[in-house]
Image 1 (cartoon, rainbow, N blue to C red):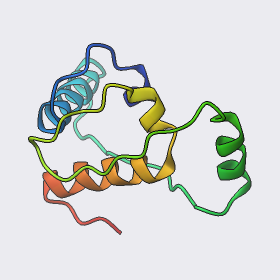
Image 2: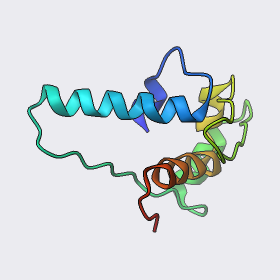
Image 3: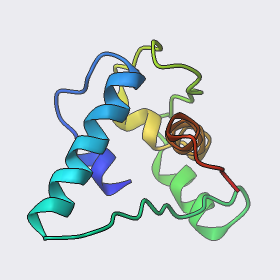
Image 4: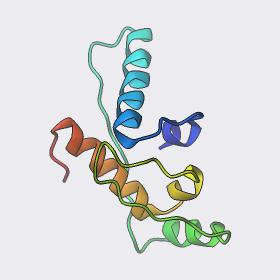
Amino acid sequence: MALLQQLKNLPATFGLLAGHVLDILLKLAKSNNSTCLHFVTDRYLDHSIKSAEREKRSSGGTEIFRTYSDDQNVPKQWKKCLSASTSKKSLINYFFFRSGLLVI
């Protein structure tokens, strides 16, 4: 998520975003002479202390989105979207679905 939070000049669609993120990860791996790349995310539990704190911090509001297709537009208020755990789960599921990997 740190990588996604830092992104500037986002691509217009989620398909382009997925390709952009993959390019960044591959360049990082190559620059560190890595022979493999693991894409690992943490879990976002709905009922947790961290979730409650995140809600408290986002008093300015959040924007929830669900990612369904490559052609779907990336929301303009990207940081607000990433402040909602539902949006993060949807984005990660999309990345895994797009790559053909199983999401557990």
